[in-house]
Length: 389
Image 1 (cartoon, rainbow, N blue to C red):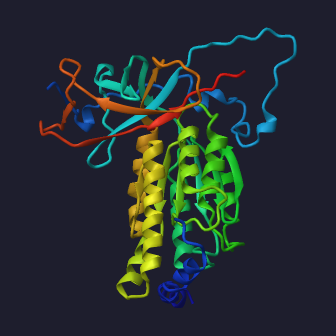
Image 2 (spheres, rainbow, N blue to C red; image 1 turned 120 degrees about the vertical axis):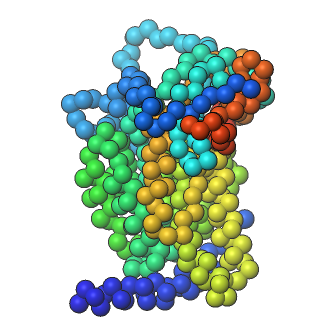
Image 3 (cartoon, one colour; image 1 turned 45 degrees about the vertical axis):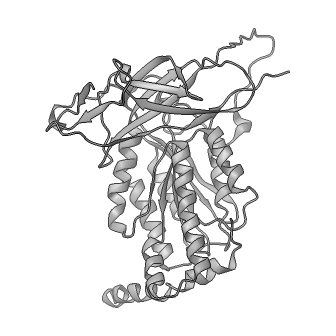
């Protein structure tokens, strides 16, 4: 009986090759000092997590964290107590420097980092590097648009979701949100992985055929914006948005304001290529999916994350390892903006690696002395506070 079922699964996927394309057609179309990288065995032990990491903020008497999604549960200060107000704004920026293979490059001195705000250099006041637990929310697309029961999209979505949960460490905090017509919190932030696995059991049969990506992302990022320390969203989705209330531009601005890095994994790549090769995908459908991929890239790049588009399930472990490395090992920089005007405007940020002696781009070499290409992951800006009248 098992052998018969194994033979049936690929046949079912191929049969669903054209089914998901039909669903997609129903939705509306939206438009020169050298820093040497030490050998792996010579790399120093990572520093202990700083006291302001998410793990230190929670009570040690319970593995459950206070709900970050319910704003009504915030503690209120007693009346009559004196209050203090600071007029100085401090901006914190988490930075990852990755080589051309996606590996974190450690031990870069503080003096080689330069932060520009609206092209104006800023003075770095705080600098640290270390490894800390992750605080991550899995945002999973699960609708009848592409995750019909036992279809290829359904199988790939669950494979990716369960696969990422298996890479988490005991001290990591994770929440699970699934969306179709609207986002639903399946489990809140907790170090108890059993809660996340139990939440995943609810992803069996989708309820709606809508996939409102914009609304789900903005709502999740807004709720996570007040979480301190290393945090991120892992988005598992096709990138298609069918009926969100928010537009693409409004979504971009909201995500930039929230400042939560988004790591996107674009699903359905293999089945799309197969359908395209057989001539089953029209020009409008092809354009829709290309636009969807571009949206995932844009959301990830502008928030300081990354985007991947795997064709095969065998690529998932490598992707999740890069997510883990980028989030656990980071440089944390803080500065007080030279422009302290509280106008509520968006200010662009750019992080560079430079030679402090001449201001030229920093040259990084591997253990053999060969120069390597690297990329810097950091949020591209923040929204200044607005003066309260």
